[in-house]
Length: 98
Image (tube, rainbow, N blue to C red; front, side, top):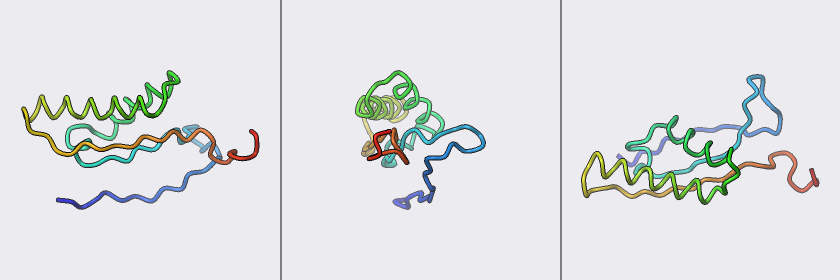
């Protein structure tokens, strides 16, 4: 079913009470989410972010992980695997030299 999961979330430069900052954004097709949970995707991308790897490397590895899951679960069949990973390094400080 091509019904997207749409959520609205306000990004803020302020550190929330729980101390967790918004570090990245993942937009992906259902081919990624079919076999990977939200938590698995966050863990995978977080590892690359924390080690200083570019978002493109995190994205490539995310898609490769999804493809491996498809292979393991479905054999030679797989759905479209499309993803975009964007790091959010400067919310609230872009353009101010901070």
